[in-house]
Length: 97
Length: 489
Image (spheres, rainbow over the protein chains, first blue to last red):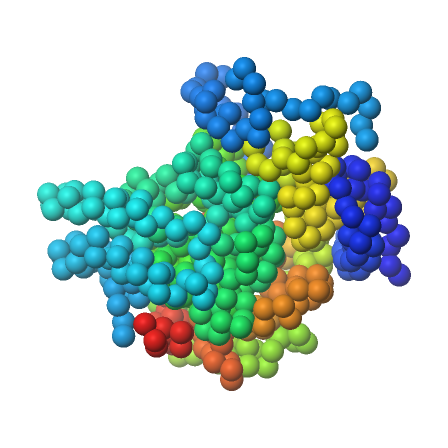
């Protein structure tokens, strides 16, 4: 049974603007994909530990010693807009769209 | 006619060392091949002929002093466009990074560059490495050198096509769900994915961080081992890079398969696998006992759930990794009345349909109320896959299956059916979930004359055994594969 997805809600969370056509197509396609993906629910007991990564290492630290990073110029080189050596963006809205 | 650009890296390194050829001659051979063919193939997004000739000229001067050289020095190399190259445009196949020029080099590239590699260009790929056909590139598809109407596979289609057609002697790709092995299989070259963590991911633009792996396209198994030897090793800039011994991976590569336990995966020959593919892979397996291998039947009981788990884990991680493309610091910006509106519009305009699909899928799978049922559950399946591999590797040293259920398909044939496209990776995905090394070697052609690939998988960090088995098969099969396209050059 196809899954019902609130496309508008998900698009808002993802900050991706979709046209109406895209929304319709996306709703159908995601429903089909999720139906297949939901197969994962058929296996595994509740006590099966999850695996986030295939390698054994965790909590990899380095010495807290400063190292050179990118220069100011390099960091700004791809900026769509800049002013006074800072990234220039449209005003930050008080509430999200 | 076979030219310099069609030879293997090891053969060319030997000729360079012996003074029979110069690095400039070799660079010109690959560059010339690209000029002759790439308007029909579409493998390159950013060719770098000036850089290539400059480096080759420097190298020739260095070599004339008699100084020792690495096995990669002077060999024309292409890089998939998701690997950053300082000062050279890196697009990830996306409009959102169409003019992006990175301020840093990927470690994999730094190591090859430091050893004298000649960079011939950045190759076309599916957008942000998401796809199995290279039809998701924002800059046009790649055409398979074996039949220009067919896809080369993906997501590293450009790198596969470049090596297959002689435009590069070898190339790097990235493999998250099969994106090196599957295009290698469809394009008739060797495609290798090392153990996760072997090669630093610093500079590999992130798609799915627990799955992404730098891989190689070469014309021989030995060449893959050579490249790995230069790139592998801990990098403090990548917390997931392994502190494992970097041996000479080509050492013992000709030892053969006597005594090796080979497990042929039972579930990999069923419905959905083209008859020619199944027959060709089985025929190759049937040659192994004569070479001294013990061949048996293996199984990964939960492999049927691997695809589902992958299409939850990878998009989830991607939704997080691609959040950085917001029009603020780099890349495309579409203006808005406020920053949030700017971000919505930038991402709506900058991402293609497959990328949007996966971001949405991942966002949904991680959202409140759904996390446990989808992402959480997929991670449990991942544990099961790891356990399946552990059990299989108790009984076998290498596992065998077809790399891809089909050979190359026509451009446009599966573009409207995401699920059909995802099924291309059904045999490659488990190795990404398990983090284990795997390699695709050409094992024949189908009735249409399209390449078939056989995949070998070994346990984590056992690349030596993987290369040994692959090299033995490669040598025994003795295939001389040359795309018909090259008849005219």
